[in-house]
Amino acid sequence: MTFESFFPFIFFAIFFLVAGSFVVKIFKHGGFKAAMFGAPIESTVGEVAGGGGKLMNLSLKVHRLGGGSSEKAIGLEFAARSFASYQMLPVTLSKAEAQRLSQLLQSALAGRNAA
Image 1 (cartoon, rainbow, N blue to C red):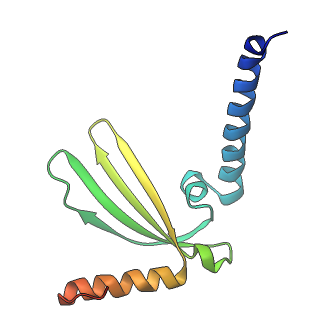
Image 2 (image 1 turned 90 degrees about the vertical axis):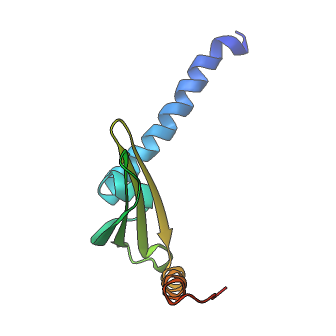
Image 3 (image 1 turned 30 degrees about the vertical axis):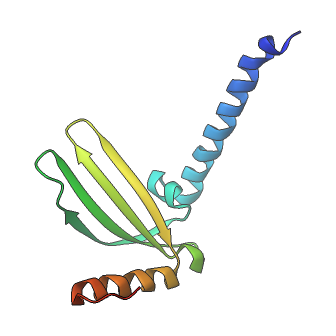
């Protein structure tokens, strides 16, 4: 037997291993979005619509994540929707990182540099 004859088996084994681990995360955390954050979504705090023009809608949702870990306390969901597509980018922040982001946003509103 040559490597070429084993390649399809190896390829599909790796594919099913990766897909299977993601399916386990979906059931473990309670949904697709929670699996993307790596923690269950405790609640959705709110949503802000962004300016995306006429063809695209942009939004930012803020989620409180569960699981008891301070490393995964806040989830930010950036979503871009258009006629034929949907893209979602999950960002997980610790409490300290979320507080730093809040400070940066407050500084931007006040018009000063907080770097």
